[in-house]
Image (cartoon, rainbow, N blue to C red; front, side, top):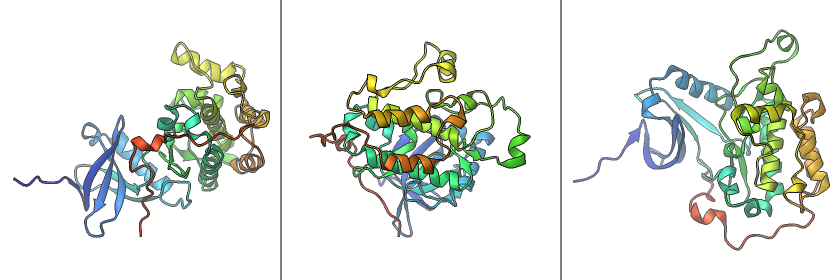
Length: 302
């Protein structure tokens, strides 16, 4: 008997890329054109969840007008049928967190390119008027060549300016990932570009050390350290990091937003003239992408 293949609208499901807490990411092939896309699909137990459907709508509304090589391209939102889903550019499935599980040395040889592109993607998002709110290694895809793309705009929000910022009140709906949250995010205060810069500083720290900047005995202990603990130095864990790059991380992770780089563009200009390592790391003999045979293939839509 011939097996009936699964379809979502005009897309044939080819393979499961990743399973999340509320969504699955599939590779889908458009039947008419044969083009391949990534489909972010709500899991069966969340398909009737109005909050999760609203997250998909919000993510599409935020990302649909972004056009930058370091931001994942959003093609469509499909609400017809039983499974709401987003249609995205199909890029490397390997995210930065997966790479770092092998240790920071596996991407050290191309880290300057990765971090510069991560910052460029973030700057583009900020230029469109949005703060990401959940920057972490999981939300950067990395290819075999070091091409890097920012993903997942589920909890992103509009940057408030001027009078709207002045009259904003604290929120009790605190969202984000504890290991990367800026102090003002933890306190429920107004967020802006500098909030993301703090989180990106935590990401930078992890990429050169393989460790989180702060850990805690409990979730509250972890948050308290983001609020009041001294900023750790990556030099403690990696002597090959230059003092100049360590200073960049420190400036990004300052407790007060006004003490951090004002914009991602300002940060990017500093990165371009700063060496990360004293001695340039060698290319590893075995690649982290060997276990991800399609990860290095960038699928470009015609």
